[in-house]
Image (tube, rainbow, N blue to C red):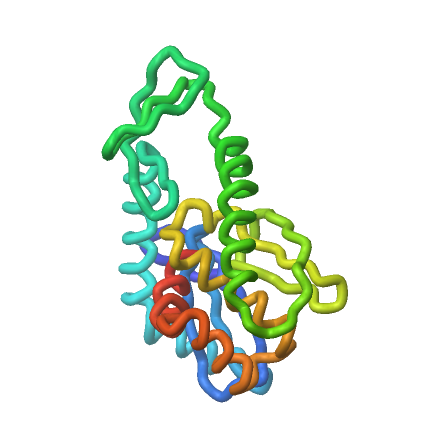
Length: 213
């Protein structure tokens, strides 16, 4: 499905779930995601989109502005740094700026930092848990729709590489969330009570993070 706004075409992705209401999200790739009941007919989806076209247009413009602004920025652990290019192979952080070379491998920097920071936070939070859980293997990769995944059978926690750009409180929440799945595989009341035990502000963080992926 496509949505045309001001002579521009945007992909509409329909996700059917066992829910009652219909939800709309526009992600950073400018694709429009509609989540609705598996019994929803296309006519109702089209009407829902038409009723929200103005809101979609505003969100798309906001994302475009952010993408333009972030092209000259380096995001790291919740801080935004202005990029300043010099003849160097290193990365040098200032208060609100960073010196890097024009050919600096930023992807490698993020991966190396994530390996270090994510492991440190996983160790720290794992040791906070009073419950008897196995120490999981850690994997890191880019994900487009999830911040973290827990393979309960294999005891593997996978974290989204993009977390290295966000405030560390979000990383900690995701780690708490995934470790809690080693005890409660589903999202039961007991699961959320356990998450709350180690991350009391998890509801706020979840809400804030919905607009970050």
